[in-house]
Image (tube, rainbow, N blue to C red; front, top):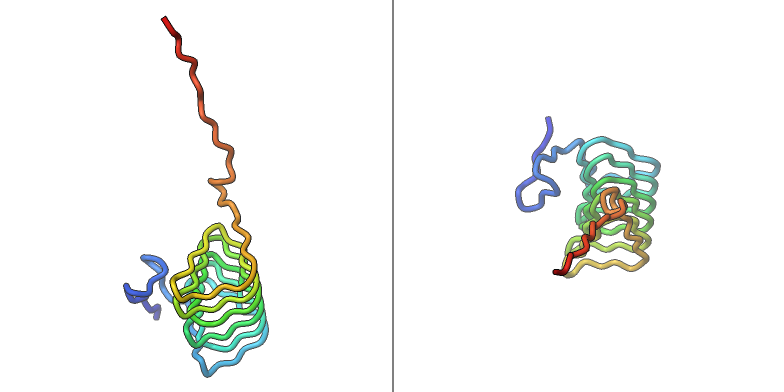
Length: 137
């Protein structure tokens, strides 16, 4: 049975949870999942998400994240490759590298590392502005 996000902490309007790992879980390896996934666990390895990944306040993650939308409320150390937005919320701490077209850091959020702002497909297209000569009389 899918769970709906509360309106207060929702990453998207119609997101439904595909799964959840509680803080009592320790995992090492590769996690891959469709849909929105929330981690409160300790994870070492690679996380691949086709939609939204939420690292809750209890999360302690070390490794690599590949995702569409990444929300960090806990601690992350490693490299993030995001096709969409990366959010570091007020209690979030990120150390490492972020590759994303959009980075949002709330007041209180910590980021120590490098950020590579990637162009979205629309922004990467060249912009053509037609110029017309005005005829003087």
